[in-house]
Length: 184
Image (cartoon, rainbow, N blue to C red; front, side, top):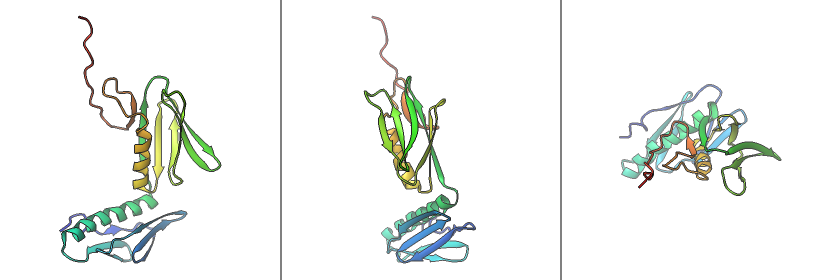
């Protein structure tokens, strides 16, 4: 029995749920998210909550039950409050700029390469850059897309273990290694 799947997903005021099997649409104002629900999971929408149940007692149905409950909960939270991911840039002489060109936001990353890296953001992901502390704040209603975008930005300069330079998540601890000992 899934402990997560048993919990109903509460629907906050103002959030609109449209479910036409197998497609679930969650919307609030201009923000909307859609997802296809697997055939092994039954979804019912009541007045103020969403309830998910497995079709049968197979291991696959039970696994998908908990997964889909979490995905639906992330959709409801995403359209009502949104998600945020903060990246810290540690390095001497590195600069970050948020640019907007023809309605498409992008990040211009100067990370010690011979040329600056221009990273276009997906349409639902917004970025704010603090040039003094070199922090990038990414916000989006889609938690999955936000995590993928943050991981892709981080992949340009992963933190290295000797000096700790690179792009890291806020609060991430880097395992530091001891360098070579100087002298004879």
